[in-house]
Image 1 (tube, rainbow, N blue to C red):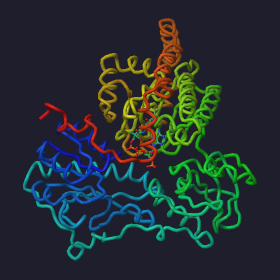
Image 2 (cartoon, rainbow, N blue to C red):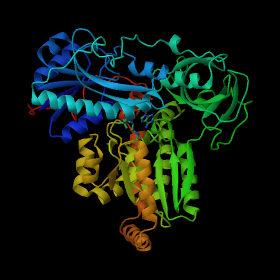
Image 3 (cartoon, rainbow, N blue to C red):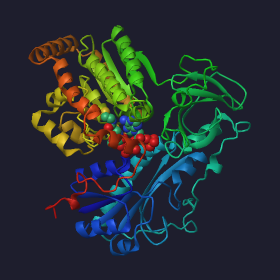
Image 4 (cartoon, rainbow, N blue to C red):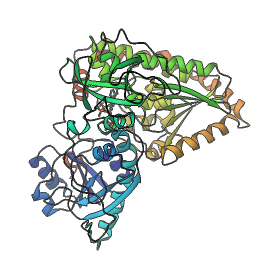
Length: 564
Ligand code: COA
């Protein structure tokens, strides 16, 4: 079938549907919902059998839904309507939530239902629930709806709570800041966390800190510290700790509407200068803000790095490298690089770079810090190494993962193994060594040219991933632990380690790693310091969330000359 994905942006859910539908031999094209005329043009160019809208911020024009079946993916249970479905679900502490695929009509979200799924809610941010539970449910429901549409004869039903008491959704308004405003003198820790998580990653909860109006993100429960409710009581790494009536929370990221930089930054960076009196706390298991931690079992070391949004700044890369070296010094056999539960890595930290006095200099420092880490992983000869992708990876993050001996990925993870969308950035992380080595020269060329998201099946076929298993994050971590333990105890362990050393030595003799790096960084130097400002413009637009004015031709099949 010819499917058109009509979406506000090519966000994670749209990428996942793009991958899943193409995998099932549908022809899929994408159009960004920019205005009615552009949408109408896309529909007339493509003549889709079915239009699917995974992520829209406004209604589909009537002229289109009257002529074509349009399926809307609504991140709410049956009967739920309105623009803040998931926000309300988190704010209200719903135990069970869902996704509904319904047909577009005059009234928003009120059309007949083609498919739906429900799932138990987790104590997590809205963004994390969207990337995991909502996406998984949406994929299942969309595939079911597409199958029903293809088979024909299915009559979608309008939700009727009178006829079916299981339908408990209702029309809810847009969540306002007042709905989630924190009363630090009354709200307990659980309530504070619900409020902040309901607005993370967008729009954040408006509040005041150090006499500044800021938006709060990235909140975590503190295990031990106590203080006067509402007061800042400590700092730890990037985060500040604020007391509640029954405990305290860590706040890792902030956005200041009025300041020079109006995008999210680490809390301690945004409030720098106002925190000198705060005691610094060392992160521990139950206390402090931990973004890197290590644990060990059965001769396997697990290195976790749960960086907010998967972005890895210079200092984070340096701390991770130190932790990695420490893991290498342990008497273990396998090191598993776990990333975080939501992302493995999205490469350089573009927000920190944007906020730096010299973004070019900070880009240079950041890429060198990631390269140092990648080199340490590639050169590890004391252990077998595994990158375990619980969540998505993009740009340099994909190649950093490929630096490990094996890449294991959860089914459902999406990889974006390319840099060029960031203003033709050349990229480093030894990708010119790693990609041909694992994918072969021909595939390497195809991957960099296509600039498309890929699922784990394709990534496996192309050599970017070695093993794919598990569906839920919990299942993936369980299987990872089992397989890592097996790997540490395979009879051929010593032979494998020896073969790895020999291969690396042979490859080093052929062309030293330093040469790959020098060549990549020569091109990166031009991106950062050269005449062409494309990278700086693209980064500015990305960080400031400037909406795209047209759909990239890489995904808008219908706009490619000669395609149709
Ligand atoms: N630096 C800083 N923030 C980043 C980031 C990075 N490298 N990559 C992603 N983010 C942030 C986004 O700004 C967004 O922030 P929000 O919480 O304010 O919404 C959040 O992470 C999620 O990213 P988003 O782009 O919405 O996710 P996606 O699943 O739709 O797309 C990518 C995934 C990887 C395609 C996309 O995030 C991307 O292109 N990232 C930049 C990759 C890059 O060029 N890195 C530098 C070169 S190594």
